[in-house]
Amino acid sequence: MTVDNERALAVGVDFGTLSGRAVVVRVADGAELASAEHAYRHAVMDTVLSAGDGQPLPPDWALQNAEDYVDVLKNAVPEALRRAGADPADVIGIGTDFTASTPLPVRGDGTPLSELPEFTNNPHAYVKLWKHHAAQAQADRITSLAAERREPWLPRFGGMISSEWQFAKGLQLLEEAPEVYAAMDHWVEAADWIVWQLSGTYAPNPCTAGYKGIYQDGRYPSSDYLAALNPDFATFAQEKLPSEIATLGASAGPLTAEAASWTGLPEGIAVAVGNVDAHVTLPAANAVDPGQLTLIMGTSTCHVMNADELREVPGMCGVVDGGVVDGLYGYEAGQSGVGDIFGHFVATGVPRAYAEEAAARGENLHTYLTHLASQQPIGGHGLIALDWHSGNRSVLVDHELSGMIVGQTLATRPEDTYRALLEATAFGTRTIVEAFTDSGLAVQELVVAGGLLKNTFLMQMYADVTGLPLSTIVSEQGPALGSAIHAAVAAGAYPDVRAAGAAMGGRTVGAYTPDPQAHRAYSALYAEYQKLHDYFGRGGNDVMRRLKAIRRQALTADDGGSVDSPELTVPEELT
Image 1: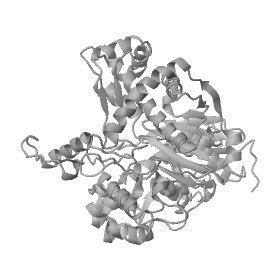
Image 2: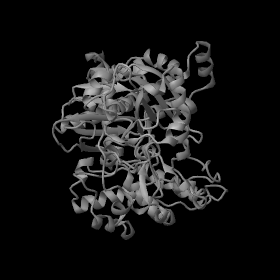
Image 3: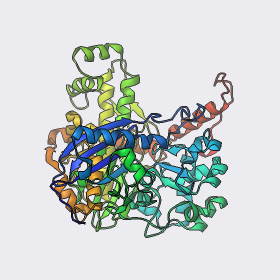
Image 4: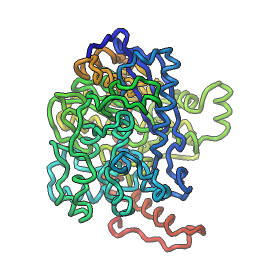
């Protein structure tokens, strides 16, 4: 098909944690004509099953309702087209990206089990969001058994399998809701499910399969390994997961008539194979070359870097051949909580007087606290924090860990704590950078995308802490632009993702450069962070795990009365 790139448009849709965003992009140069956002009606269900009977959910659960994703297509896409003043006939393709691992159980035709009357009130029938961390026990077993058996795929994931990923969540589903597991025909990533709704074709993408589904070198873990985990899990890969994987940048199929009616787009245009929100951002930032570590910074941070060689890097979320672009190995790491940590502190730990002063200045609390924190000398607050409020994704891969602040006194102020939390996330990124470099993969540049790049103080801090130049993506909708880039490739406007990214993406090179004096000052604090990191994260003191075990036991035992009444015990393996 011949495409007139000067006239052609592509639509990218980024499905985030709380909302979906659609952007209309000019194929010739990546110019973003307009965007629109639609919030999920049920948001994140982490306390009660609001889409069902309202039953309370256990600790560490995080669910979503698949219907909310379709609502994004019905609302955000038409609104973006309207704001752009675009002729829908000029749109040649649509691409999508998603959080991951965010799987859901479906029937053979793609119907989510949560939409069936018999499962509407069963939490396990719903989408398990990426930050559903209730499968940690299953993840621990998956890792320990793989290490014991010396499974060859384990080093590709830094030696640890996360509770956020497909297999841990699938095993939890089997063991806690076998009736749902039995009724499930496919354990589908939301990234692939939404493409299924658009194209009518189940076209599993290699990004989620490789990074989140332990799909390496064309195969999943063996059936005998899975049987050793649980005999009923032996056929999980064979029966519940896809056997054929599509290619990034390819077309999953033409847009169906029904999806065209939802979106206002022409029936029959290309629907790109799905992708993960972090990985799809790299071409949007012109950051696909080896040595460019891209940070997609929002509620969490995902770190993605390409390399031309295969290395074993501790604590990685995976390495996949062609996981970002063909011809290079794509490495993924991450921090489970970043913006979420800042938001939680502002929501729960700041006095009203600060909110009133921020309002008087015409600022939000984040801006005001950042201003106050920026006035301090490095180390002036006397604090060190561990950024594990949502567990640790890299390099420890342990979601039983929790956040901590050391050094508080009666003189500690909110801005002190806020700055310590900012620094902790920067120290966490430096830990990841050093894991790469210690494994023989040089990191030469940080490239930042996502909402947090608007905080210039935080960006300079990351450059100073890591000692690396920091570039910033030009687009404010990096994942959505990346999805539009893939849509352009799927429609035939460019030969491959690298070429499309070069034309449609962009970054501001060296927007922040490290200050040598600040780097030395932060390095002294980082040394203390490392000590706490290893003491609490590598077995020196398992108090965080013990506290989580006690909390779960207390909440399970509590039938509405006092949680002090049951006799609480700590599991033997944690004593």
